[in-house]
Length: 168
Image 1 (tube, rainbow, N blue to C red):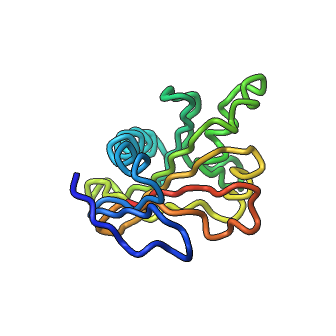
Image 2 (cartoon, rainbow, N blue to C red):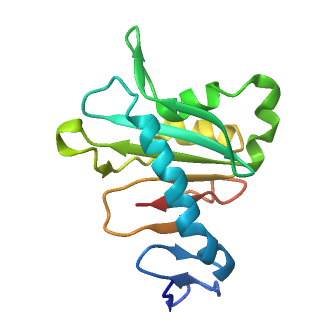
């Protein structure tokens, strides 16, 4: 993997970037890209199950390299259930204490007629709050950008801990 150093944000050091992602430390940079692409692809397969026509979202929750929860968006009566909420709800209440050691991967895919390209899927405010409330360690999501990027949550002043996100 070809890395090029960039000027660190603010006073931080150890900031690396490539055509695929940015990362605060080099260890994270080496392992992140392939692992996150793997899990984002699985989340995309979950998204295909969504009954929605134009906005198919899928989410998976990973604990120590094991998928423990999955979900996709759908309607229940007049309410829209988001993939992130469905994935968290799919985890048994007795297991919820491990969410602080979990990552969530969220993907939105386009319609079948366009071969399901990845789309922007940053969690909405309510889903972001649900992710933070459940102490999920990292949130990764797809975008329609040309390259992947890992960055800290823009709302770290609101969070007790930074949330890392991946853009694809």
